[in-house]
Image (cartoon, rainbow, N blue to C red; front, side):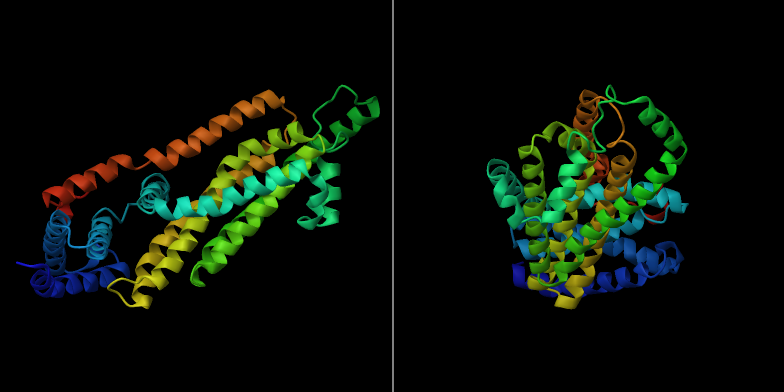
Length: 359
């Protein structure tokens, strides 16, 4: 059977399965009638076999991507409906989000190129030519950075020159430290998540808004870093940002990748209409952006409570390096066992029955 006849014969089943997915998305699969669940299971196994056939015969990336998406969504329904909201959130953060991230890692890599490359270039240029900083950063911001990271700034951890009155004043502020840190955590969450949501949401503008946001923030952050270091405040600055930067900068790139997914869903809908493509791919993009938002919440907590703490810089560098490693391991290996199980089931054409999914 050639490709045209195969598609003509199997397309009604694929469309029927899509209808099942739409019905099940509005309520739990377990709430569907028993006969529909049985039909759903049968269709899922058949489409999994179709996917294996198309892959083996090399009948095109678009068709493979279309069926792979159907199988993945169907498989997720079989493994959904955890018993509690906490369990659902835990599974999402430890399995679903990193799996979706890896499945769409190409978008993340493009976002990294658009974000980190301009950051590195502007960092280098401004560090070597600090007089150019005012062309990118407003003058009032430059003054704030000089004050914050300078010798007399709030991030100066040298306590040897503190006078007795300074010590008394510091002790009087201990009681309000927790409230101040909590307030700063709230500010950072609002600010950081706002950047990520902007990177993601502007993807609907054919991805152009996302590209602009990534480029702008990359250039701006690079210029800020280069300027502060050029003023001789590099140690205070880098020891401050190294810990929360692991989650924050990575999450911005992840959210940017999700925005590029939205743009690509509109530009290249494949065999779907643009609206259908946005519905399907948009749902995955939202889930990835949600994971980025969770990472930014972690970054905000670190930035508020750990980064400004009066701790030796060598400790901050050690912890910060460990956090970068944790982020890498999390995105690379979390949920990997589930990936392997799905690949095994796809290659064998065997998928679990509804009653077997939690065994």
